[in-house]
Image: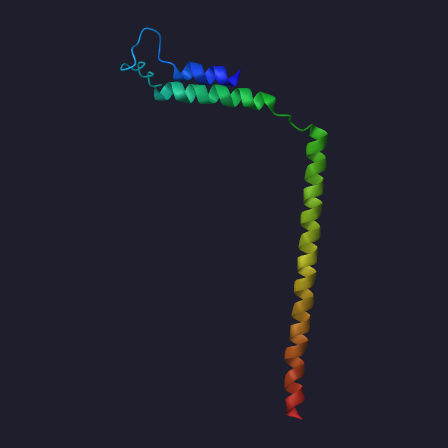
Length: 98
């Protein structure tokens, strides 16, 4: 079947000789393009499976929980490394004093 379409496209238009070509397609105006784009966008949005309110609440809770846990872990590592470096900085001079 697809081969039939290709052959039909390759054959010259009815009533035209081989030296003549088919008439050029009319250009679509800018406003028609925009309108077509909005129509296509609207039809695509109808295909979207939107989450339920319960799923939205659940996903929001999971995201906030992960962000809070990550923030606590980063704070703890920062605090611990700061304390370790502070101890090293205060301990090393004592070694060289005497």
